[in-house]
Length: 216
Image (cartoon, rainbow, N blue to C red; front, side, top):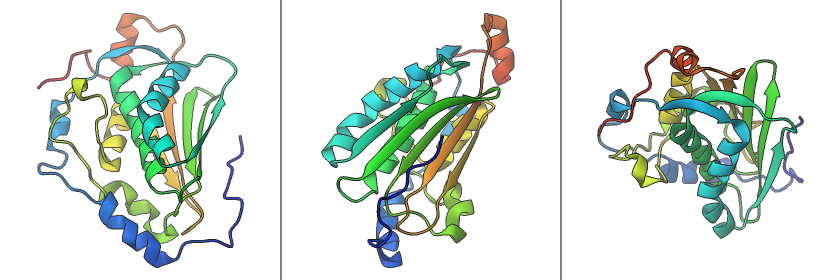
């Protein structure tokens, strides 16, 4: 599956525009990642398209409000995995919202989902302000936007990239970000282990913990 880039590279935002966006990204909340110790995963069998649908439902109002076009690229066959439905929805919706905040008006956001080997792969691409190449390695450490509460009832949990990475890690997955530079958009890629008809006991072993509800 090939990424779609911006239709024109002649209208690239200047580096100063990217710097001006940084204060909006960097909203550190008291306690930073100390709330991670309170997270417990509710492990269950999942289907990748269900996560896509849930993340889109949460993110669509912001995407439409900012005038963007959302393009979905979904696998033809179901992709089974195990994990915490609410937490993984939060991960994917956070990436969609991040994409919705930073492309110029009427930009394009592509949300792709497919299976590669034994992994479920989710890609969020945008045509936005991009990221300086020399800052890519720092992106998961720079911008922390953690809410005071991790209550599932909040629905649209505002979580930053650092917490996104930690939630993906808790699911035995990986996340990476790529960008060709300022003005050329960026792409987040989340990879999670697939599951073949898992039993309840398998679910706990795959994530290395017993199923439990979030404390709080």
